[in-house]
Length: 128
Image (cartoon, rainbow, N blue to C red; front, side, top):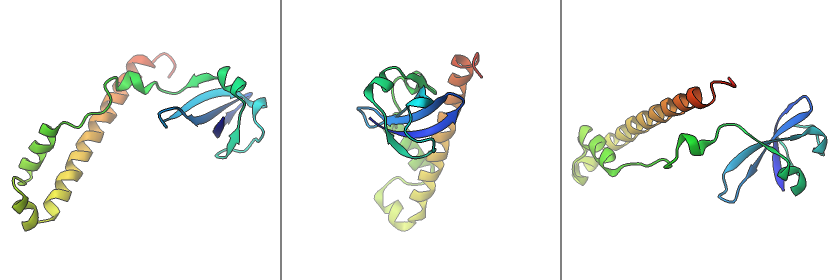
């Protein structure tokens, strides 16, 4: 399996690989199983080594059990709050939509950050 060497520490290495959903996962493997001691490079690691690996990092399925959902009602409310009710509103001032999206994205990421920090503090406080 192709992995990216992320971190080297003592006798272990943290490597990243893409799972069947094309999402990066991190695992800890024995450093002696690496063919190179350089970070941020892609290398081949045997399937046996990966089977013996230990998961590393946050289990994002705990943080977002339902995934991240963008609610159409929330988007509509943001548009209405910014004066975008009809297509003509966008044509009259094309920066309104950009401003609305920036506000929405900032709010969404603030909510995501708060949720992540809450889960980390509750579920991972014993190892921090």
